[in-house]
Length: 149
Image 1 (cartoon, rainbow, N blue to C red):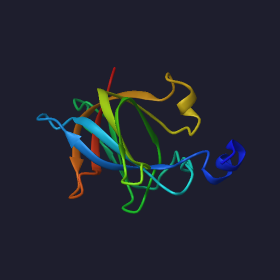
Image 2 (cartoon, rainbow, N blue to C red):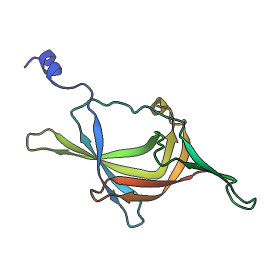
Image 3 (tube, helix red, strand yellow):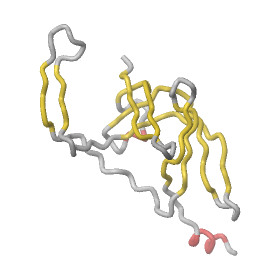
């Protein structure tokens, strides 16, 4: 098959979704699996605002002075940037990519509200993963982050 015809049959950009995640004995991420999808990658619409249901003023001796409590249905979309290392590629029986296996190299991550943040390692705020909870399918359900000062 000529290369031009081959290029027309293969997608130039492939989207991926998070697959199973493995944690170490301390509950930190060690392995993340990415599964290819049929749809090309579509960046999420970033939202840097959410509906506030309540505001609590904290006592003077507290570490934080104000607590904002979001409405139950409020969502805020952000990007989490992490350094990963390609550890392996799993192939299907038809020699297609079944999943990428990535090693989580550090507990340090960056969080940003900008969809253009991938181009700059210095954008966003630096955090360290404090705790990670997985669902029944071993996918990330919740991640607690502590800001690095």
